[in-house]
Image (cartoon, rainbow, N blue to C red; front, side, top):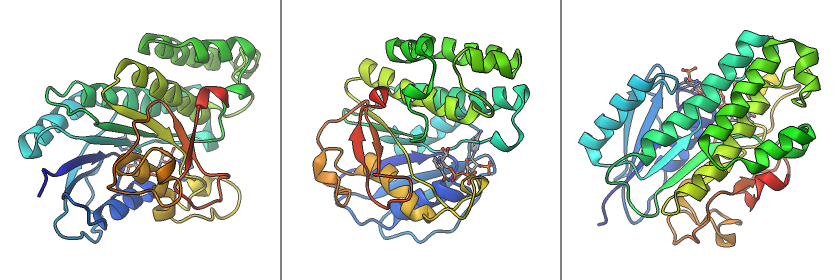
Length: 295
Ligand SMILES: NC(=O)c1ccc[n+]([C@@H]2O[C@H](COP(=O)([O-])OP(=O)(O)OC[C@H]3O[C@@H](n4cnc5c(N)ncnc54)[C@H](OP(=O)(O)O)[C@@H]3O)[C@@H](O)[C@H]2O)c1
């Protein structure tokens, strides 16, 4: 049997993160899956594990560099370098947005995801064909921003460019709602959407910088979780249905061969820097790829 495939998932204490670990662990592929299910609490969510897969629960706060570094040391000592990173952990403060919460959303979602990507990519024995999956959202296309900001998103070629955009958003927001809107970020609560736009841009930039790694982002759709229930009405998708696009991006065929059923565990086209979503946020499926910067 081949060496295990080591997969790290963040934010698995509930919701889509828990759904992702459940779907992964039920797979029987030609190699065992070792899934590190991580969250701030390190909660054991007791999903069903198909033989010979393994699940390990760990504490990991993506906003704490010390927590990230000690976590990757433990992974290395346990099963060797991680092969796949699924950045699922996020917060939404839309329901109580103010400058402080807006900044917290950016730090948690964008900065935390960025630091997880950096730590994963810095692993000394990272294998060719490793993957990163960033879970974002489809409702924040580049065209929803002002013209100057759109250009900044499109021209970003280094992480520092995206950090500058994040800093500018926090500054504009702290100067009041008029300033935020006049600067092209949009009106009312925007920090969650901006954090996901920054991560989609990060995905594109990291894919360009790391040709040996397949780095993509995806939208789970509208899913029945604590965060999903912040919207109006009952979200139609279960956490396991919401997990599908992420699982396909993690262990499926990234090419058109995976559009129908994910083609989990099968050979994959080399695809990087793309954004996967279904036809709408209520559709259940494995997603199709597009260029986020053209949305
Ligand atoms: N639900 C939807 O309809 C929907 C739609 C589009 C995109 N998404 C995206 O899907 C992903 C999962 O969302 P969800 O709906 O499952 O949300 P959720 O139910 O609120 O779960 C979020 C998870 O992230 C964890 N988390 C947050 N900050 C963290 C941190 N600093 N370090 C480690 N873990 C942290 C939480 O853990 P704690 O227990 O520590 O708080 C929790 O396990 C998110 O990226 C979200 O933006 C969701």
